[in-house]
Each structure stands twice: as structure tokens, then as C-alpha cells.
Figure (cartoon, rainbow, N blue to C red):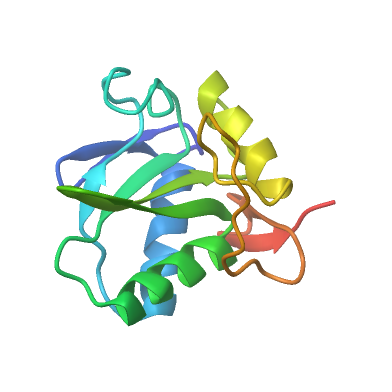
Length: 149
């Protein structure tokens, strides 16, 4: 199976690289995440960021602040740009994977925002949440995160 092969998981569709990165992050966190939205999804739900590869929303309704921080940390260590969206009735973590091909244009913009310490939303507010010391991306070939330049 190649990196772009589509995989179905928890009712969502992902490219194989993103699926592998999610599974790696779950092992690091020590529990299974609840997937709210995958990649290749309806463009109207997230300003088109989920129409390509490399994206995931993890549901956070009812989770403790500690568990949310654990998910964020694991996703970022796996090579995702990730943010907690504390929206009424829709608490979730939105994440975009570095190192995967076929990411939607809006999601690519979010990767730039992440590298610039921003929130990945239209107003580009500062985001001071945890970031790994070295920038990371997912390596499909190695099946693990690696440093990026």
C-alpha cells in the first residue's frame, strides 16, 4: 500500500500516511481518539481544509483538559500542526499533517500558520500551545515522524 492509498477508519476516510500518523499518535497518548472528520470530506464543514489528504478532526466533547493536551501533544509529535477548537457544541482538535502530498490549499495555509505560531484560522491569532523543539513531518517510508528542515 502506498502513502496515498485510501483507508477507512471510524467512519472517516484518510490517506494511508495520515492514518499511520494518527495510529502512532494514539499509541503515544495511550488511548484511541474519537475521529470527528477525516480527509477527503465535505468542503463546507471546515472551509475546504478537509477536501484533500492529511487532515483530521478529533472529537473532544466531555474530555478533560489533561486528555485534550495529551492528544495535542501526541499529534504534534507525530508531525501534525494541531489546534484545539473550543467552539460551543463542537469541541475538537483540528490537525493537518506535514509531509503528506495532496493537502487542500486551505490546509496548506494552516501549515504555514502553524510554523508562524498562529491559530490556523482566518484571523491568524497567536497560538502559544506546545510545539516540539524540532519541526517534524511524517515519513511514510519510515512509518514515524522525522525532523524537517
